[in-house]
Length: 421
Ligand code: SAH
Image (tube, rainbow, N blue to C red; front, side, top):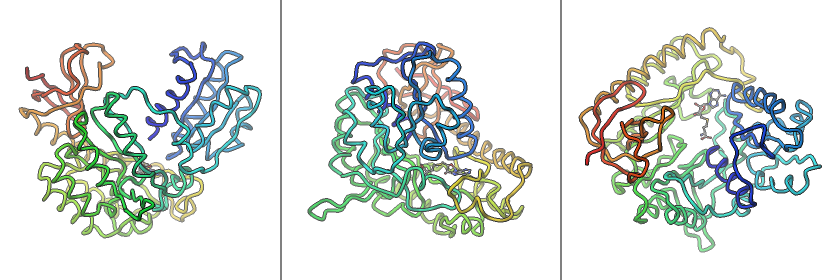
């Protein structure tokens, strides 16, 4: 979502004649787009602001947008008095005001719903992967999560607006569509005639576009995987055989404390349904270790579920108490030391899963999407249909973006492959 927001901010400023620079000391405007989901991310923002303050030229305007802006509000000005603007995730379309009035301090952290989408200019070129938000906010209220506070309550965009963005992306260079939302599979829009549209309808539409070869969506809430959506994995070949469906914990007791679906059999049933319509589908998850009151036994259950579901790549985090959340006030907070030990053990299991799946790909042929040249400047980087990174010995950036690649080697982190001519 932040990549999308960053692209839209850049497009908005370019439409006003601004150009990008890599040189901080040369910039006239510096915007830090921020994430507040864990404390570490928030701390990074403030240390980056300190760095920017020292490196920027005197006249440069600078400020923060996104979830840390929303969380900090006016306090951000107190901590960093030189800041010119603090704009929440639903008000960054107001950035041009600060350019026109450089002497004001602009603070807006309101939850304005879908207003920003109407204010942003249409993209005139799309990268290979077009991120298209379908909804914003979340109603689930997981007890650890700051998102309902920072991004607000769930609100789905009109079907016709998402369709227009998807069509525009396909006409301006996109090959892959990634539908976005904090609770993307909760997408539900009822139009003026009473027609109800779901994420499955958006997928069906995107699949009709000849320029679009790959479709995916993120982030999903397990029990919002309705049958119409599951069926899409069997019906639409363009929908990638890969789904991030976070479980967070393998302990029903902890899941209840998290206010998450706590019936593991329901989760297993969804995985099995997905596999029955798309046998090659692979699942990834997010995990939180060291949630308040998590016992050794609860944690063992998390290890067990990771092993059982064989997630092929996952994100794992130490629980981080966040303002405005219920869990931050719970008793029996877990020590940093225990969190670290548990995270290390879980990562061991997740890495084994990932390595095993990556190794099983050796010898296979997959159609992959080019992301560009890697940092060494010597290889092209592709994404497989399972979103693995695949490195190819070539720097021919002019080749078509979709290539059939034979996987020749693999390790935990990535694959290596050769383009099949
Ligand atoms: N559905 C959300 C999830 C974003 S946060 C969205 O797309 O906006 C991504 C992951 O961060 C979550 O799945 C969870 O595993 C982790 N996370 C969220 N809050 C956390 C916290 N307080 N401490 C540690 N990890 C957290």
